[in-house]
Length: 291
Image (cartoon, rainbow, N blue to C red; front, side):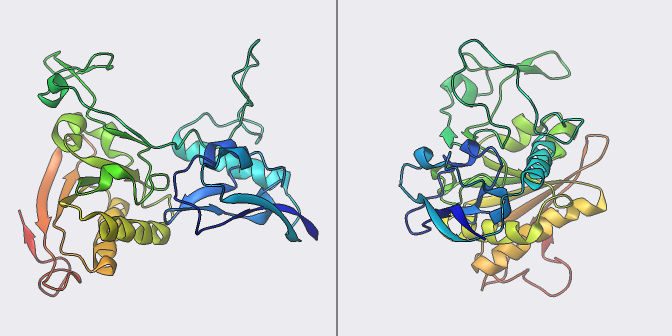
């Protein structure tokens, strides 16, 4: 059918993600550093996203497109909400939000804000103390510890490959379960790192390999730390990073940290690239490892 539908000019789009939370149907996602319409049938064509693009890259056009499928859009939103930990609605509809007397704006049930933000750590935080206004946690000794997070968003699918925080950074690529399992995540792994998190079992590994490769190519990363669980499926996150390094033809060092399901670090190892940046330095399954 011929109908109105969103179109995105990739040449104008800078991947900022401002448009993503404005789409209640979750039809726009950041993929390979650009905003993309993930499915014609998810777009209602009403253009709620138009005013949220600072680059003017989003327009409405009339073209041949599948009819808007509200039920499919609702299922898509539920899937996004489940992945990021929002409550699952029991009847398959987007999560409802109680009305307020003075709402700040239209309520949407899509992905929460993916607007990039960078946080400056105070000197006390940089030395392991607590920043003003920070929410502390406590270690086994009851000592308050501050968050080491220095940017937002953290989901690999949401962080643009050209985000300023990545330039020359030490990048932590963590499996979703690691921060839950390992108590020392902030103080021992996240500190002084940019971070992205993903699940190699539930997410799309192919799209992530390309996105990681673009991050490596574009940012002259100092190193990559992979933090993963001991369970077999979690090894996929290391394979994604290794494949991305090979595609990017990079020699960036990769440090692999394995966490047990009991929350203990089982192993640490460095995986070197060969002189061309393609794979490990010798044949076999990552034999170029330093414990």
